Length: 403
Image 1 (cartoon, rainbow, N blue to C red):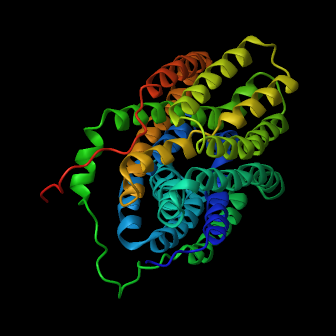
Image 2: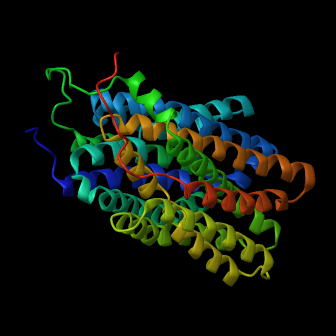
């Protein structure tokens, strides 16, 4: 029987990697106004680069997942950490919108593909027993969510104390810590001298099976909405609040609250995923988001209403991640989990691209974010409906398919 890493080691190192990777990117909205004002760029210019980042993250995530399934997560994480540092440095030093889109967009997107959930959850899927997998994914997401709570005030402090450029360079140094942390995720059987790992399916067979299965398509549709909502809010809410006359500190505290309550939301979703139907958990999350956004727009805008909204959204923020990935593992198994998770996440990132880009585009055209807020509500209702028919039972497989 193949030796496994201890679950404590997997969760500790995986959560630390996600803390850095997701924590840094969670605060990118704090740079929108400093960078656009310093460089004389429009909000659409910044938003387009972050949109490219999310799309690149999704595209590269597929290949990062394939590489992690084939060669192990360690090499992918080390490469991703180096790219993260280079991308942050490039983001700080880019003199033109084109170079900014290349570094803050393509380079950081590739870095996030190799340092976030698809790769980490592949390790968890392979190293943790199925009867604790959803819980373990929720634990990793919850611990990683602490980075969002921790890093946003840190990033605000760095911007205020050192300026936006030096703040990005300091974060680049932080990103290099991903490499040493990845050492704790070196999986047995993924070293150069190991024989080729036997799998029941080839990559092509696994992809054909998944994309022909309606539940996989429904999960992708729901995850599209997740990306649209969270990235639009994460990037544009700080500027939305400042436009409404609230102080920058309100936005920083709001993003920090999202990160704080995200800890509880992701842990709760992962834990409930061991007991309840995951499709019902996902439908409830998406419907809850739509309701929270509608009430936020309807209520008078005050710091208190912002903090309540941020807290509620935090509970629902990344709580889709454990049940979605656990459902993919439950249906298709774990042999190609990182790759299939990468494809589902690619759909998430298409939504992220549209959410952040449309936010900047429609603001520049109309002077308001209202249209995108209403889209986020409608899409939340749509996502709740498409998740209800998902079938969570393992897919029936007959005789092995020809290669």
